[in-house]
Image (cartoon, rainbow, N blue to C red; front, side, top):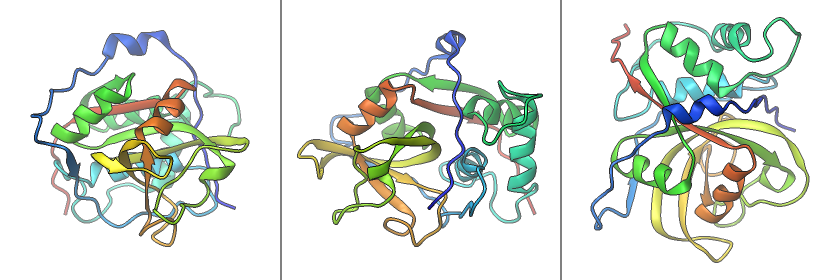
Length: 224
């Protein structure tokens, strides 16, 4: 069984930092951003930290081209110190805390939130990947024969991962059209080389159920 670790606390102030993504040209129907191989968080509830680092080492701005200047564990612990449950022993942390720490470390100047699927589609098509946090259900532990995760079964916790691509014309396992490609933090043996597809239809339901999608204006830092 895999470990999750995304915690969530609603904050209406996030709407003050709503993302406005450019409208892509009509002929642009798919884009998949560069990423390194999927990380593996192992048996620790540090998915938020792993998703954040994956954003930093993915295109179009690759902050981490070689050596990681901090450990996943250190990033996770720093997030726990500023998250909504700081001071109380807890497993996991929030996406909001992740972006606070990345801002403090000087990797980003600001972060913004997407509140609907179309904004996420437009952003991934035109600008870059996004860190997301959603609930995770029993049916999502494994991909189907077409490489999709599907909604179904009981909710088992919260998880953070990264949307690395989008295909608005993809024929999905649930019969709908349009899908995101995600990269997880469970190693390359999970899904399809550590990745999976999820239909816009299913992701819309995840987003409506206290899901979140965030991105940031990155500051390029060259690491040795």
